[in-house]
Image (cartoon, rainbow, N blue to C red; front, side, top):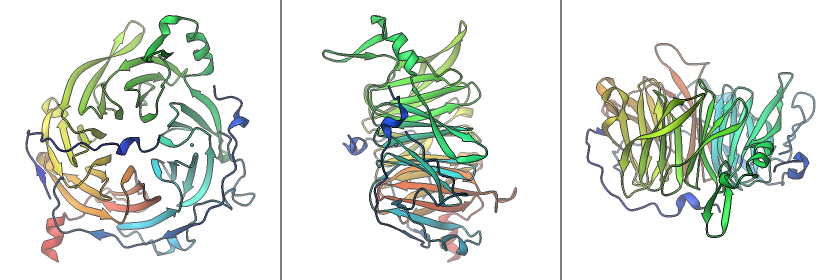
Length: 440
């Protein structure tokens, strides 16, 4: 399985309705709910590596401290075998599998030794060392996107709201308190006075321009300039200033739902949509502020664009689509098309990058691990299998325990619609599939 160095973008059947399968915020107490008691199971498994080449084809916080009292998740639907980590000697492959009998995993975020998971259960769970550490919940419906930035957590929801949470203090890091939402209640009131701040979204319905009126499907942050980007099923890209939570821009970016947004290199922002396009937006100074302008359309096809990721190490943009292909563009070549990665039979729903590695999760239940070699060639190191449903989200963190300068290792978290989160350890120096086959 290798990359095809081609500029030909082939048309494939559309994905259909897979991405729409799931149809003021104060006081906080208004969103309190009890967590239902459900049974669940956890398991470990050995990684399976395919040697065959495939072709494309949710806020009251829980305030109990786990160090002082019993876990607030005594009745949690998530259960992990306590002996799970005992067999982890730093080997590559599958480390753990956490299974939940109800609800699907729609979003993941990793920050150091903490992992955040979002699902359609309205709960955001926080994990530490693969054990339930904390959590918070909301009545807003499923959690479609999670961004962790310092001591703040941003969650994008099906109801079109972006909620902001904060770790209360270093003395009680398990407590997450809701700060509010984007846009703020103050900004909503201020904007609602002027008719020019409204836009018509359908006949006889106007909404404030600074609010998303449909699901927030994706988010990305540019920490250097303090901007948060949110893409939505309402087809708009919104730009938020983190310092004061203000919506600086609302851009009618696409003709269909936005599935992915990523802050890239050189003041660029990339968006991908079900309309089949990948667009490039450039941030420019304008007076005392900034404004984003459309500078290029990298891709225009019949198939939906379903995921985007940027490798900051190699300055490459990766794009997954509903036909199972991963297209890529390189900054060093002025964003010219750099080739196609063929490894999935169905839609590529998520992408992640780490070092020289690229991870693609698909509706076919597999995760392809690619390594970018010198000259821009990509080799498939392995195909991670084990999920029985579409892989919806990925998160990657460096494994500080086993990683070395000469052999960087990464912990990969994969969330699936099979109601599980799997944890993998992978090495950048692993042999590719062809080498594995030859040795065997």
